[in-house]
Length: 334
Image (cartoon, rainbow, N blue to C red):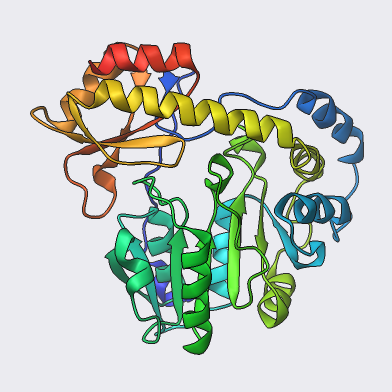
């Protein structure tokens, strides 16, 4: 991190409601959790009186089996944000250039700037058409946040090959890939895959995540990661969740069905963007964004103000939750 850059960087707005009486559609986390998580968490309490084993063998093994990659290439992190910071920290230096999707997750811009590097932007649906040679790092979010557009693995593999020829590191954020049928890019040479376990398993407060890379990239990530960076409860619950493949499949089916139903209902009142993620980006037609947000809140619903994303000036984003909850969202918005 560049100490001189810190003074010019600010915090990034995110979704999430602190008022438990409100139904939160601003954060894209699963409202369901795998059965058995509570007992695993409680069992971890006794072990939390001592430092965790820093090799996180069980967590890496479960992640490798889940992703279909070599467990030794897995780097445990306290959530996807820490994995991103690690990835940028070992690939960017002061004065370097990074290419980021627009609109895109605001933490990419922030983390690049913290390294003293320069963020450059391209439309998210054109990023795989861009020549990676002028950049030290290219970031792809699959599916993209906040638009929900996904990228085929074959297209990403082809672009990863271009990045290798250009000696450009490709960082692929797969925070929402569990909600799709796409295969991970974990294990692809020259690529750092960033994963968040907190979205699909509905446990954002536990901060479970990981990065995957091979060769020299993996060695740098492994050296740079903080010692004991993953708490014992997070490591134990994470390893357990990664083995709940039936839960993931059921979640994927529910989100797909409900996303199509909600999108169909909203089309007459909003511009509904195509999505393969557990959320929908909505363009507001005749009302102001603040009016839509305020009206929904009066009905006990919190939606995401998407005008905080670059290039979006009349948009909101809504998560896809359970059917009865989605019905409340529809009633509030329509």
